[in-house]
Length: 74
Figure 1 (tube, rainbow, N blue to C red):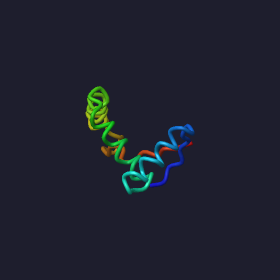
Figure 2: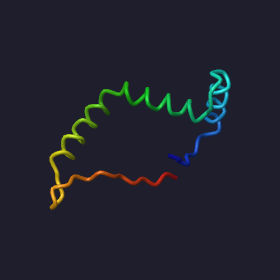
Figure 3: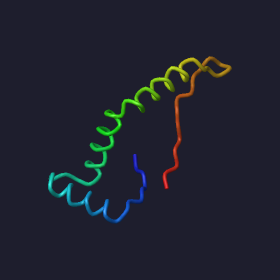
Figure 4: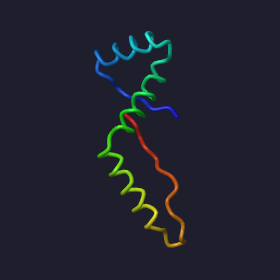
């Protein structure tokens, strides 16, 4: 999936430097860092669990739950 994001210049430079240091792409660095940061955020994990429970509890009139989310990244 492609997503367009804007980074502050210093963050972009650090990203490129770190990617070069690790020998991987900047996209791979972003994926790894984001997943790790989110996995370690217990408050977010708790909130996400609550959202998942609420979604499982709400059904459409046909008995089907929502199965897709569309996002628009700037």
